[in-house]
Image (cartoon, rainbow over all chains, first blue to last red; front, top):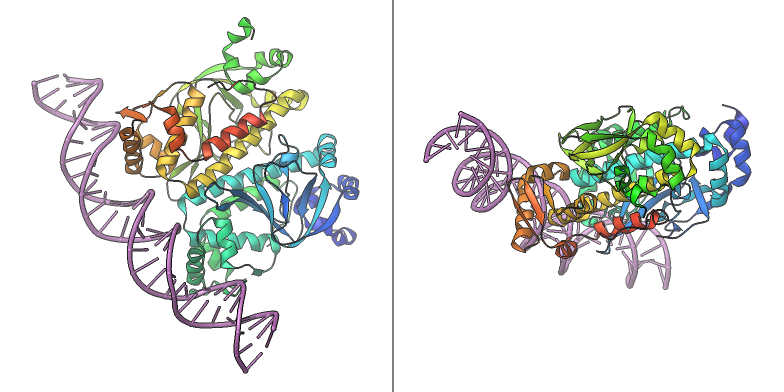
Amino acid sequence: MVKKQEEDEALQNNLLAALPEAEFKKIRPLLTEVFLDLDEVLWEMDEKRRFVYFPTTAMICLLYDSDEGVSIEVGMTGRQGMVGVVTFIGDSRMAKRAVVQREGKAFRMKADDVEEEFANCPDFQDICMCYTQTLIAQISQNAICNRLHTVEQQLCRYLLVNHDNLRTKTFSMTHEQISNVFGVRRESVSLAASGLKDRGLIEYSRGTLTILDRPGLLKAACECYEVVREQYDRILSKYIKIHGA
Amino acid sequence: MVKKQEEDEALQNNLLAALPEAEFKKIRPLLTEVFLDLDEVLWEMDEKRRFVYFPTTAMICLLYDSDEGVSIEVGMTGRQGMVGVVTFIGDSRMAKRAVVQREGKAFRMKADDVEEEFANCPDFQDICMCYTQTLIAQISQNAICNRLHTVEQQLCRYLLVNHDNLRTKTFSMTHEQISNVFGVRRESVSLAASGLKDRGLIEYSRGTLTILDRPGLLKAACECYEVVREQYDRILSKYIKIHGA
DNA sequence: GTCTGTATGTGCGGTGAACCACAAATAGAA
DNA sequence: TTCTATTTGTGGTTCACCGCACATACAGAC
């Protein structure tokens, strides 16, 4: 890896880093670094948006608001992905809200530029499409997970995904916030979390949660984590060599 | 509508019918009509397949086999869609099994031809992409539905989708078969079905189920049916004028 | 008509999570 | 230091679904 490249923060995003150097240089001027605040809405439901986001240190969550008044996560992403695949697939209207779940940085690109690069740059197009396939894989697995697995298993999975994207073992999140993306009660999350705490897998206190035993979490999580991760690695393996996490 | 066109069975598939006439004529020779038997596997998990399918009277189900030994539907389609979007998105490997759920006819196209037309025919490409967006919408809604809604609500939704795709009110399906795609016990399906029967919404007997009161089913179903349908209509509205179902 | 396998109905105990209400702990503001 | 709002813990009840076991009922084969 070239030092100069490493210093460009945009390369912290896996998809941008996956671009061949020539393509990256072409696209780089189209990217603007932005700081995303907690709970900021990047994409309102059914809205046509002007930007696509490539997070680096932020995490974004795709939420659906049910008739029952509950919000549920259908997908989430951080440095491993992007927000706004509907820009090049379909009619640019997302049936979900994209909300910032962990504040941090991202690089954004105008929707028009995305469409143009998508049409003119085969590598960019292929990377976007491959990411879309991993997104489908993730959403599919969420459907399965919601049917089959307990809150505790899902919590483990959620923490592992956060760890992969944020590359830190401590997150600021309350049980309440987690319960909102899971579509379950706060008490159910507290119960699951306290079980994991008793077994020494995590610790937490007043809005801060720390992973103590990642291998233990992996064992306690459902298969869904590995299934999604394997597909991500396989589909994007031609571009991304990493994953020494 | 031109009579001659109506007589081509391939036009019973919404996506093929959506093609401009010139494009359709170009693609038509690449299509082969096939009969799909119940439980036939069109796409094995992780397998690279040589054909993409456009069902006309058959229905196909995307199944995931969990570690627990349960199969669960993540999506399904009939004349409204196609099977094999991974051919043009990503690496052509599907993480699910595509299984025939209602036997019937479909038109298939070689994966190579699909890739070529996708690259050379903008309308075909756009229709495929738009369908992919509706598929994402469907899978997302399944994730939500699995979290929030009862077996009875899901059963109603399932029957409505079958009705839309098959355009018939009687289906041959046992409670057992339904329970397998739902990932629930057979008894749970029986219980839900008997509730709907008591209210005069459906009737059934030994592997045959008939919709008696579609508006009633709509009311008994969860919002998910309408949400997915509205997105399908909206996203493909530029191509498909129909839906007088 | 009888036999048999498939399809559906029913009952019972168990579990995960919902819903409701309130208690305890703690960090930050006053 | 005390107060207050936020975060987390706990208990009791209800509900949907599971898992198991078994009863019925029907259709087709013989």
